[in-house]
Length: 210
Image (cartoon, rainbow, N blue to C red; front, side):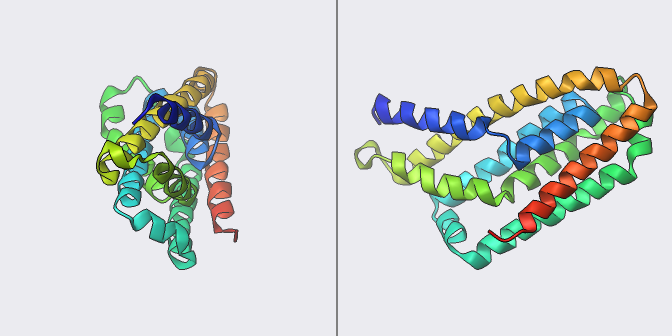
């Protein structure tokens, strides 16, 4: 693989990853309500879901999903319903969010797996990213460089790494608001409701045709 196409892939990947989408907005809402740690775990989980899509694209399933209206609709519906559920849960649990602090290490550790899980589900059911990957990865495969599957997995891994860096940057910026919110139960209540509404809107947008 020559440097030129690889650099081109990196540039396209940065542009795609830096653009706020459902995964970024989801992570930002987690940073505002749950703090940076929860949001960064969400980012890692989301990257895991994204890499699962990379593997699907590499073995050919991703092309089928992105090219099939029915499969695309199923994936989009699953992602939308999960986001709607997360949004409603965030609003219903606003009192619990306001009452707990990031200093509670045991509680934070207990919440690690759900944060990773939520990020993974949102990532793997994101219909937009699988379309992008299915269109992007094959363009940068060079026949003389080895098996196409291995090349797409490596390129997809690089794409996921870039996404982690970009999404984490958004999270670190959004996490600044957590310190301000932490000083007021009322502000945490409002932030939790706002984060829930963001997820509900994202889920609703995914359900829209097109």
